[in-house]
Length: 262
Image: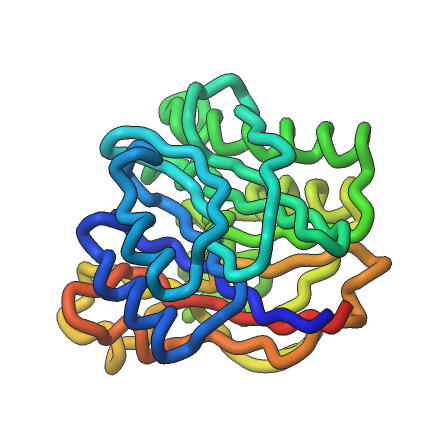
């Protein structure tokens, strides 16, 4: 069984329904994981996606905020949704394919603007959320699993446009990178994207604040595809669809792809 998976922080699935449809029509991933859907599930435009072949859905929604969905051409059944740090947020959904592979779709809290939990509750919530992920994967170590999503951390020096300038900027601080590394180690996860593209600057997010995001190219790799060690070597053809960041009324994130032969 071979399938291509994409993950994309869509920044409102209702506002950007047309962009999702365009990705489905032009790229045709077998599975599309969305984050920051900003909609209850019953308000998501799922009928239109089903008409494009994505009839199988597992999702958690929330009015105006958060929200995660897995849209699939392949049959998939929901196997859980965790609320780490007890935030009451729709930030995780998991589904199992017929071949037994479990897909985890995450939207990790962004963490606010100040990387200090003493003065910024949101940063503390982010660290607590990551700790919850770590503990869960440590206690129920996953097998035959894929983890994708907007993890809101760019871990490597070449995952940001300027390592030294961003060391004190939320998403690239050492404490966040350490927390993410602990999640990865606890679950035996491997970074599929960087296994395929081991060298060079690589970004999946560019701020709306830049007058010309493409020319400035001050990006960060916040969106990730991981796999457990037992299936990680089956992954290949990783890529980031940078061009989608330039579509009309775009998300500030670009889709990340990987193909698995299982």
